Image (cartoon, rainbow, N blue to C red; front, top):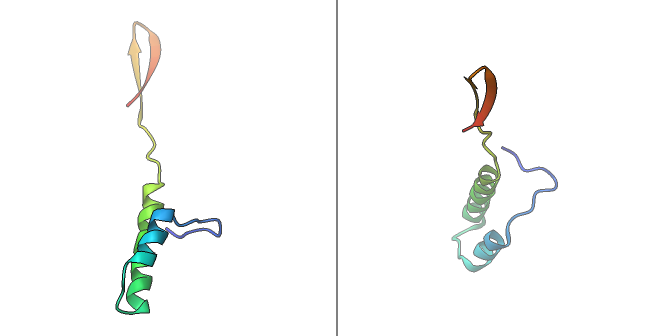
Length: 64
């Protein structure tokens, strides 16, 4: 997943980037990219499975 131009890094992640000490800019960039990917994955919503069952001739829709 790629962040869009409206992506905002969470305040907690920004704080971590400021507090933590990194040996060089490359490691800091890797950590930042990892945190961006984790945030994007956490925002993905899983769609519920819809099952149809029939009781007494009347269709009933259940959401699992």
